[in-house]
Length: 245
Image (tube, rainbow, N blue to C red):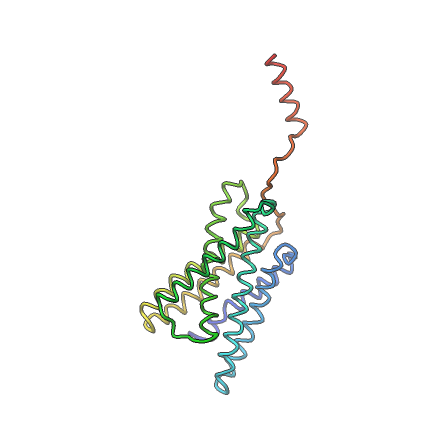
């Protein structure tokens, strides 16, 4: 895979960052904005480190794992933000506050279980970063699946910022979990296909985010309280009561 093709997602992320700034989406989704800004900086750092890899390969390895840890942390924070914005006033309920911790524990538990079933070749801090990455992927899939279920139940419009973020992450995480499992099964024979799949999946995720953030939108969140009837509705209720007398 050529260096130009490998960094297509970096160019798309830069375009997405421009769209977010133009739409002032940093006020609605600050953690997602931080994730995208970090992605641009991390991509440029990896590119600079790769260009100098012949001089010192340790530079690229260190840059990769440091930025990967940053992606893990910001990925978790973005998922928390997505649930908080999507659920809106429902987060005031005590049970709603347990949703993200429960999803987080489930993701970490499944990642640790997978690490025990499929022994990793990594060790030390790299192993824990990789486990954290898989945990983030599980959380992203869980959040996406949960929102797909909640949207029709709560009567929300699908093309909202938090749903767009969850859609991109959910599709990418699903593909990566499947391909990572296949890579562990087939080893180096699957490495080239894994690289292309990762490139295409993340590029599609960024394109989804660009599409969702391409137009300004008013935040729409579910309310835990019933709205008051309008004057017209009250008049209809009174007329109906008079006819019943």
